[in-house]
Amino acid sequence: MPGFNIKTCFRDPTHTVFLGTAKEVLASSMGYWARSQLLEGNSLSEQLRWFSRMQRACCFGNGLKGSFKTFSPANTGLVSYTEFPELGSSFKAASIKVSIWFFAKFAGELSAKNLEEPSGYQNIIICNV
Image (cartoon, rainbow, N blue to C red; front, side):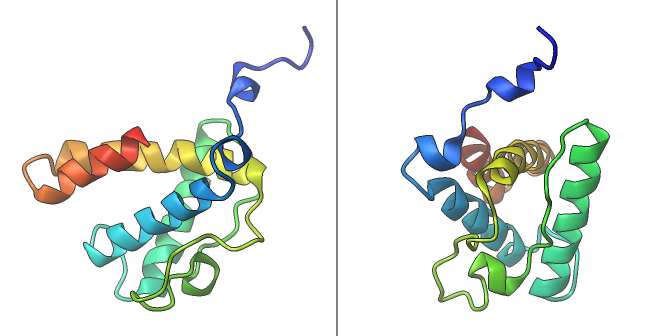
């Protein structure tokens, strides 16, 4: 069938899982990785910008398209570590779906590097979400 692609068969986790759960899991993952110093950068803003560039490059390199917004402390709910992390309303379901793929890939790579560290086990949990 013209226009069919197996990647379009992936269910939309933003709307099929409890609404918004994917937004919370992704923001929480970034917060955990930033606090654990697993993202490059000297500040949270730099770490999130670095992570945004990595996501954009990896997804485009693998033929996945999306409107990738640059993550920031404000649009992830990570302004302070006491806040409840959640991606803002500007992140839409179509881009969340692609982000889940990248986050799982990133978590798997972290786990492979850090399996002996306690963070390695937590990354495996994130990867399996």
